[in-house]
Image 1: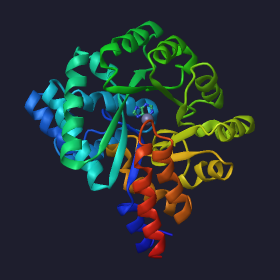
Image 2: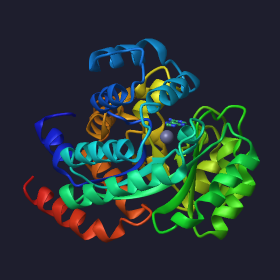
Image 3: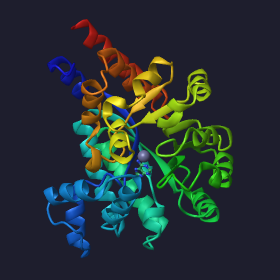
Image 4: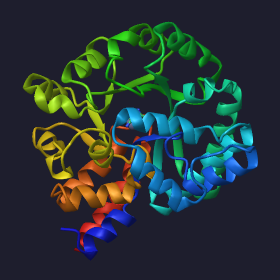
Length: 340
Ligand code: ADE
Ligand code: ZN
């Protein structure tokens, strides 16, 4: 139940977030400011206008990607990328997020001719400033645009070589249908050789087969979304036995896939099956922030206080490198339970 105690827990508990895309998270205010600075015309001129535009035009994953690419076009120079990251870091701090794994979907910038070093240097400067000013730890996951060719994606992974002290992981997103995981097996082989942590969006709006391929063919250590695992009992067992984190985003699934209601989301059944899950916002301007994600799983899916604490702890324990924050989390939770 979303009573005052639950609301306080959700807001004040130190949290990790494993699945949020920088390019899909540009706050409306930042997007409008950068559009004005760079002379980019957007189909809206106010924050409310952006919300309305999204409501009207984004109905599934493919229409989301069209909008995502359009809003991201406001970023041109290093300072713009810095600003986006800094504004996101402030939003994280305001939600008591202490550790965040951000997907950096460079290919959305590359198609507009923006060099990789402009994007990475801007984001990296932003990450340092966020740590300095807000104490939020950020880890970058470089996202492959799965709609591109295998060769283009291999070239992208190879181009990350000089940035291995900045980028910790490789991910894969964008339009899943028609672009199965197996298409990018070469990119993942290379990423593995480079020592990158490997995750992929799979089973978001395509089937469980794609989750199997991400795990067994691409060597993924985590799955983003993984919603369709619910259709495959053997896969459910495999995920539970191997403690593979599903970095789920329930509000995003309700928005970008064809779930009829959030109450139908399988996350609770997956947790009851022993699967390790965390929850994230994915793309806040479209679906709300992490606080709203937590409030929704309580209100719509029936999460208890124990469930809420479990997914928050998973966001650190099964993170790429946030485990050192577990003692801080555990102390906070022990105090919280004492005050019950
Ligand atoms: N990029 C940003 N959000 C995404 C999502 N939910 N699915 C695929 N690609 C994305
Ligand atoms: Zn995502």
